[in-house]
Length: 237
Image (cartoon, rainbow, N blue to C red; front, side, top):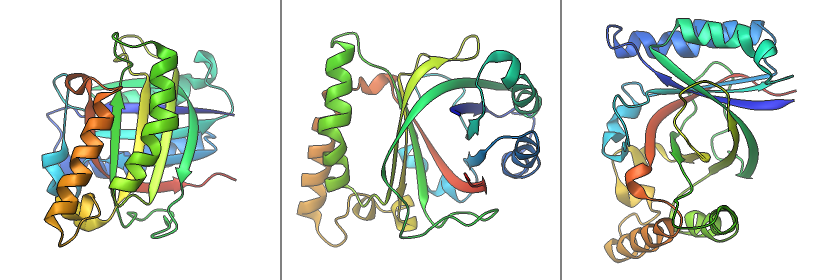
């Protein structure tokens, strides 16, 4: 099996909540019926937009949804029916073949099929900066930064996706796509996000440590952050 991540752009003529409901509902269901082994939808709906202060975009318009699938094959011919369903529901989409590494599983608020997961699910996509080698970038991200992120944030879901290759023409040149799960309170509270509720000094320490670490391997003007609600549509297995 292969994991494919689709980054989604909404047609601006379609209302936000209507589109989000369609992506996590009829579109995700259609993908499951086509034979996807796993389907998860992340949508930037009204609940997620309480955390709009976290949104970052390196291009316009901004990404407003993500679909994550496990497929028998990501080859063009085998992927074509999935691309067609997603393409018909979006203004634009970009697909990536990725290699998944999961550091933290959501045991605090386990996802339930068809329901919104009780968390703030953040998707971040970024490139390897030209100032460092790909090997150094990968080592810094996976073997150094990972623990710093866990130690400085109240993270209970952490999935790192290394982009193997883009699958669609014109896809933004991401090298990594990360999903993290935080408490609902983190949508409106930096203290909750950075595991520093009631402690301003700890908040500053954690923010400083996180930003210092990120700067080692991410050019922040090339970073895209999507605030989302997560829906598990079809579990693996």
